[in-house]
Image 1 (tube, rainbow, N blue to C red):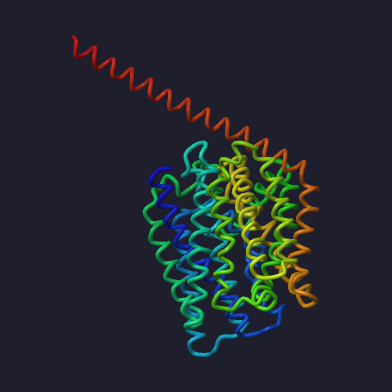
Image 2: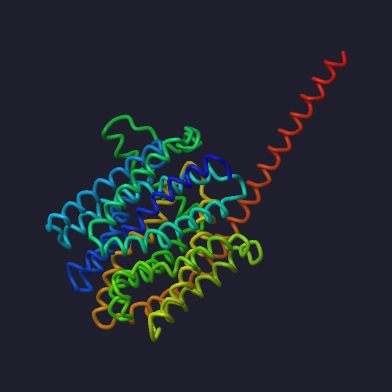
Length: 440
């Protein structure tokens, strides 16, 4: 995969470790401060709100600036916010509103960080290896967030509520330092036309709006991504609604103690890691379209099984299958989108994709919290039914997108093979000329 990819991967692993600790620690702190399902679900709503507010603008920034520098600065910003929250907890001044403020700040930084990383990956991964590159990133994310950071955050929380947040802040700083070694060639879009000129204040506003409009035009008129984004909206709202009350569902409905909450979440890591390591071979056998249909169906059925589980052990098995299905399907979908999007528009188009899913997630979180007030186990059952219905309605659009991705990947592999053959021929000709000169 190359040295640049492995450096990028190392920086992502450290940041993923921080993400995982935060996503376990903050809900535990919220549950410590209040037992209201709606207030706890509000933390998840705040988590996704920045995508709706700044997601499209962030895509424009990613296509203009040094992406590595942007990722470093945002990681340092996330670290500072978590240090501030740790001090509030130590001094006894933490509140649910302080948690909301810190979550919002961290996630604003994450919007820029994630878009920059996803836009940069196609330039770092070798031709024809994008599925494999995404699989390694997601596999590493699974190991760090769920095998390592989830249980670690749960145990540290039992010792002191601020400890997982302090360690989290250090992981973000380490991730920022590792990325500094990436070369300039992968830091910006390779196509200069993708960066609009900014001449003055008034022109800058028009330029940003023009860039956003260009990305939206590609999504809704230049490709078949529109219906896929609609499916993404519904699917994410359903799964976020389930995640919003997960801490209460696991703790109160299934009776898992707080110290083992991270361990319970880590059961999905087994399935997720299996999915990340096998999805490339599955796609090779079934193709992208059939793979996605099978995986999304499996995810919806597993959500229903999770809600109807009679005890924590059966729920853990269902949670494992959900981890496998969602991780694998996300890898395939992300690679397909990255294959069909031009490099100069990658940041803007990926921001549209993220906004379509995460931007409406707060609504799903609040709906999950409201339904959880009626009965917690109803939330995952409803999520599974909604995802399956949305999948049936989106099947034809999913077929078109995966077919386009297959065509683009085949063209990229052929181009890379031609360039390699030309290079070998040039080397052979040079050797023959040198041999002729020596003979003379």
